[in-house]
Image (cartoon, rainbow, N blue to C red; front, side):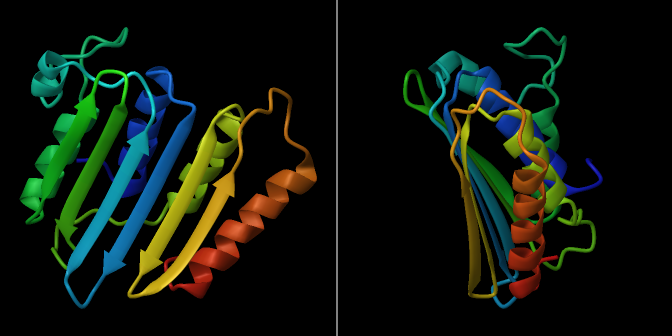
Amino acid sequence: MMEDLSLHVLDIAENAVAAGATRVRIAVNENERRDVLTFRVTDNGRGMSPEEKERALDPFFTTGRKRTGLGLPLLAQTAEHCGGRLTLLSAPGRGTQVIARLAYSHVDRPPLTKIAETMMVLFFGHPEIDFHYRHARNGLRFSVLRRGGSTGMASPAEISGLREALRSGLGRIGAS
């Protein structure tokens, strides 16, 4: 089990980039009243063949250079252990969507405390990618869109501006 759910978000988004995505959408929904935490990562990458999709939850299967692909199997195990499930939607040429749903109040649910740091890593680690991050918590919403296309270094003003937007936006909805 990963120590923070944002590390799963990071892993899935990195896989999307490796699959040729130019757009990645990350949506988090925390709903204490319904006792559910859901996050969804959607990309426009190459997608998976039916065979790849079928084997995607096998820890000894990977399409990358690694010998194992533990990210999705660990997330599926965590979701099931925490009263939820993992859904994987994908088609060749149409991208992939990973949806994880967990019981919000489950005692073993990892926290989601590093999402701002995760988004900063994605935004500035892949400046060529369009990232749309949306976070809802108990009916309050916050979102950030970072357009890709940049190949140069981000300015200090851009970095601090996005960091502050994440800090204040997540704080406003009570998700910091």
